[in-house]
Image (cartoon, rainbow, N blue to C red; front, side, top):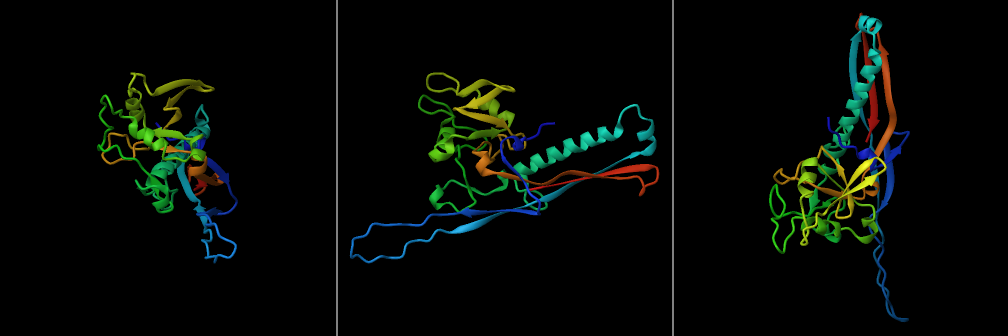
Length: 263
């Protein structure tokens, strides 16, 4: 299975309640120049808000016969635990990308987007850059590169955010981008050796494979994401995986009920 390992790049916080809250500064005061005896009009007062992230519950309820647990030559209980942990991880990773926020985390791809600039875009709406072609990039020519829109996207970010940007998308999308060349015939893709092997770089920023995103070939899809993930998306953990072992409800069977809370 493929999975979107956003925990590796996003901010993660552990809490002891059912909701994480953080005050946010949504705008700035205004100031002005004034003469010694000039009148002073009231200036804008900065507005604050509250970021609130509730945690949601995941569960798994699997069972085995008591005889299998007793007689198997392998540790069946440990094997079941490993399968459950793996599936819980893949399920939460999908929710971090496409979750709708109802009884599950809200994924970044579920937020509204607009092509308008920061100053005129509603708070909480992400900015997008369209290629102008559904399910495709721009056609290459002597004056146009299919990567032009990616360059535009980079420079939608102010200077303070660009240092820690990371691309994200599917392997299908990355496979297409690896073929893009500049006007001198050089590939824009750059493979670099990292601590854990090859790291994909595109236009100077690392690329993370996010299989739960739509491929660029999907009509109208958000096929590529670019973000400073530590500032853009917070994963909130209430507690680790908990498990109840029940040999009583169904005689001859042992049920394993696992839960985890995350937002």
